[in-house]
Length: 390
Image (cartoon, rainbow, N blue to C red; front, side):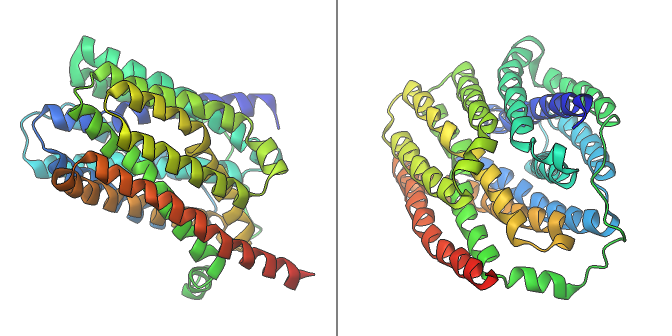
């Protein structure tokens, strides 16, 4: 791998994830500040899940059909910057306006995260094997960005945050022009409905997506319901930013060690370990009575999101056929990230108002146990496939 490609990918991830954190970490506080309840915020936030599902399904198919990822990312990043700037500059608008703007901003944010990783996986081997290392710097960007967002808001208000997103988007796009596109197959893929039917009837693929859906539902709950609980416990904006930054910083060592972990342990074993850690984390979130304890519980991020994302991508890469290597990744992402993003904010917001945050978070913790148990039948499927291949 040429050194400048590695540096440019690292810089691109830092800049991009920085502006992604600007928006994502401030959706809930911003909507709360302008007067929306937990349930209303849940409805607004669930909108971007629909956008995520549609975009990832569409972009995955387009990338495999036309054998490009770079051009798609340029368009998505441009639109993200414009929409996010508009969101944080909009005051006293109807709820429908915020629903549309959050849907587009969040949908493009989630889609870009998936596109970036699929882009790296689609490059030549010497770039692909550095995915985990490169993603570590995405966490650096997220950590720095989530803290910088609070400073920008305190100095220039939310409007200043929107303008900052737009400016940094331009810098990221300039850096993107220096990076290579994905490796192309000898011919453009002629995809058919039968190809996707075969993928979606693959028992290993479907069960893996279900496990990832349950686990990522917990991640989404950590991004909305846990923040709602912190607000209910009168956490300051600085404390909320500290939670985001701590989580992002703790992801860095796991991403840096990702190549070693995948070589030492199977992706399935890593998912089992992560599901247990998520269960413990949410049990602590449910029990916490002060914001500081929730921040302490964020230490478990070391064992959750990085492992889920890296292990899942390698497992999907192993399961899916070559001609669907991009779309299989993005279809899975659209289901387990988009589906959970659509359901969890609304369902958790509904139950939080009726049974309280503690019981709701306790129920979320149970999802970790369910995902842990489901890894065992998946393991048996993998074993049968390995035996059949001998």
